[in-house]
Length: 277
Image (cartoon, rainbow, N blue to C red):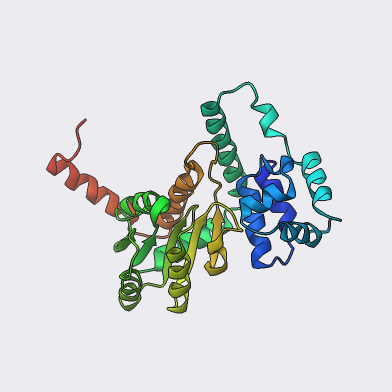
């Protein structure tokens, strides 16, 4: 498990049967891992959108006497990143935070089993729908762009609305067996609803989200976490983007004609003068 604040928090929560409200608190704590040891129960409750007694019950569910005991544990066990970055401005701190997220992802990938399983699921699905709305739309679009070079039928779903379920139905009728979803905060309700609908239609849902406690987790067959940065006004998503490229690699490894497709594309691109040297 990662030695980062987020990694240690995830380890703390593992093995506990949490209620939906408690998962919401856990999700908030993972996102604000560097700040949590210094938050009061009232402040954490406000950030998570729950009541203060819910925070107390959450701490007890984890085996602590109350929230003060949980916070004491966090201060003793979670690296104090804020102090380590005290000499850097806010822009540098944001970059350092993303480096930490990438290090956490590298440690997670020490066990390649989940990614390899995801690669098999994605490669076998014909067509392959790729979902990402709002903040996650760029992640889905980037994956779909490159995936289309090696996979015979990739269908990008980056717009919500009443047609989303119709497009999922069309993919299922065409033979889809899996769906890849990029889900980043803030999580649109229609993404959660779409994943529930996709699973009810028989699709295996592979999700890239910022933590195992994200709201989409309950509707995912395989969720691989990649933390987002929260140090700037808008979240940064270097780790989810890189994880998307890792999934591309794993999928391509499962497609026997992937290399031939890439070579064919290069030949056609050269003939068209598509790129400049």
